[in-house]
Length: 98
Image (tube, rainbow, N blue to C red):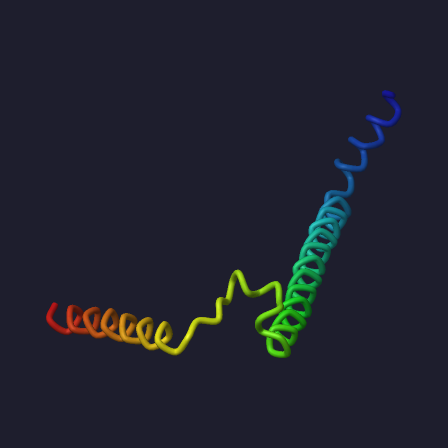
């Protein structure tokens, strides 16, 4: 045990640049794994979203997106559009007055 500990101390004492290179490589490896995971997640999310929207486009009444994207009539859409425009108009009016 003392032999290994002594060699580690010797390595740290004589070659700090080597230890920094190893540490930098571990950080770079970890960063690559994280970025690969994020890329895989976004790629899978994009594929799933596109396939779900294509299915919804083909059959809007028989799809898993019905709970998230309800198909209301045009009266519901117009009412929502009027409410949104009224809210935006009031917000801009308040910003201009202040």
